[in-house]
Length: 140
Image: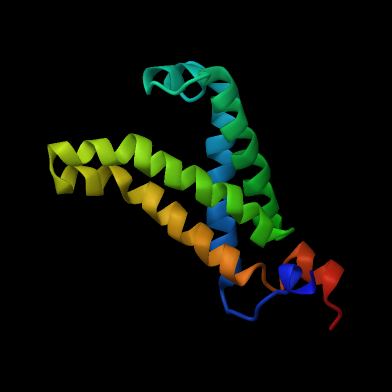
């Protein structure tokens, strides 16, 4: 259990947490603030089953996960649903674009792939010395 909250000494790591947390926080909140364009309306257009439930379910995990990573609280755990979210997003919304050619896919998937890989990085490395995890679970 202790390893789950173990922090790292990577210099500048806080910037990884800040950008990943910010992007997920904004994406999650937009599903609630703009339901037609970013939430259930968009999920309906994409053909997701139960679009209202699905959009708000995803929005909840993006918002909470984004906040947790932003502040460095249980970052490894928070990254897991975000990894799943990005895998589903890439498979369902980006892979179909491969039919139009690789470069169109590469362009539209660039943010999703960046968020996926950064989430994996956070899942592996946890938080840093500038985090709530460090303040609670590690004493200098």
